[in-house]
Image: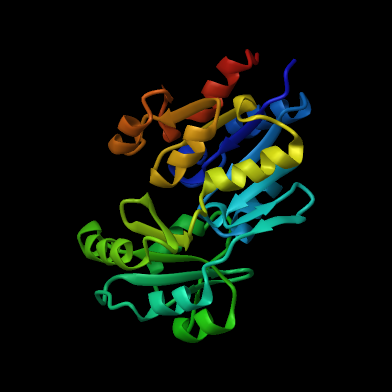
Length: 267
């Protein structure tokens, strides 16, 4: 059997509606790993957060975190790191924003936020990894920043996005992981860039890759992969951008697990 690399986004793709890995998904990935296929988890989440999902899967999986800013191998060795330039991180923390928009920084070890945001806790309740309220201006100067994240209503994020694209188009990568999550990494940093690093380390080709996603931060990864799949709950514009991708069941219908079982003919 030809070896494949299976890479999946987490939220609204691999995880169910409760942000958990259900039993069928766990069983499917374990079987494929035992058969010699390579598993990778690719998310905008922090490395420490994703690592907890890998632990529950109990398989040797590669981790692509902070939308590609970090790549870790199954033994937790750091394969690559791509940071937001310090001057840019500092400028982003100083950018004016509405009071109800939360600013977040991801550093190597921490998730920092500018104020309490209880609504975010549910998203990370299954892993227990959570934010720390901090002085972000100071953190941007003193710590390596892998990702800057604005969380708020789409109408409040739209003018911020416009400003970012006007001022930082040549030095930052701007995308969305959800309608309320505007994400900024260093220029050229995305999941496809990170996936290329994984493929090189494994001496594999993109044609050997199955990729699963749902939102704009998955587009580059899905475009690179030989077999692209979008869940039925994916953003409509993402579906339109990827006519070559196979549309599968929604994340709360175990779409990824069912698609994998059909592709590999698992009992």
